[in-house]
Length: 284
Image (cartoon, one colour):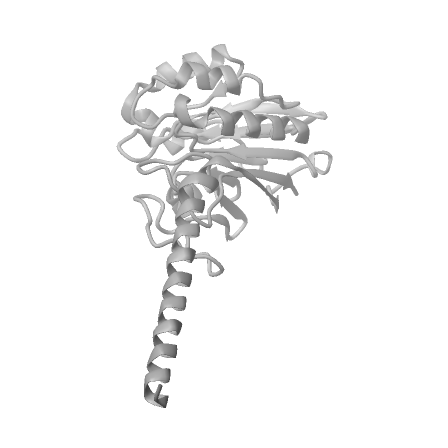
C-alpha cells in the first residue's frame, strides 16, 4: 500500500470517527432535551432586596413557582416532586405567577389537588398568566384557587402582618390581551411600604416602575427561553412581553425583577440547558 493510499484510509477513519462523535453528541442532547430535562427540577437560591423591608422581616424565605402549563398525563410526577422539595424548605411565603394551564382547563382540578399540599407559614399567593386568561375568565381561577387555600390576586393588593410588621403583596392581571390596571393594583399602598408584586409578563416591570419606584417584582412567562445555549446561557427564542427580562435577577434603581425559568413547557415538551426551576429567595 502506498503512502498516499494509507493517508486516504486514515483520513476516512478520522472523518467517520468525527461523524460518529457528532451524531452521538446530538443524540445525547436530544435525549436530554426531550426525555430528561422536562422531568426534573432544580432549586436556585438568591438574595433579593425589598426596599424598606423591616429588620424583623429580613431573612424571610420565599419560594417562587411559575408556568406550570400542567398536563395531567405528563406533569404529575414532576409537580409531586416539586411540592415535596418545597415543603422540605418550609418557606415563609409561596408565590405562583401564572400560566397554570396551557390551552384548556382539563388539568386544573388535579393540579389544584396537588398544589393544595403546599405549605407556607404566611400564605400562598397566585396571579393570572396569559395562557390562563386566554382559556377562562379570571373569576374562574380566583374561585377555584381560593377554595383550595391559595390567595388569588387580580389588579389588587393585600397587607400582611408578619412578626408585627407590614408587608404588601400585589398582583396585576395578565398583560398579553388582558386588563392590567397598575393604579388599582397599587391602590392604598403607602409610598414607603415594603412591596412584592406579581406580574406574569416580566417586561411590564418598566410600567410598574412608573407607578411605584421601589419594589420587588416576581415574574415568569419566558421559561428562561426553554432551550438555551449551554455555557453562555443565550436564549435563541424570546416571547412577547418577555424580550428584555428573560431569566434571573435584574435591577433598576431601587427595584428588582426576578424572572423564573418556570416548571412546565408549552408547544413541544422540550427543555435544554434550562431545567424546571424552584426559585428560593431570601429577602433582604
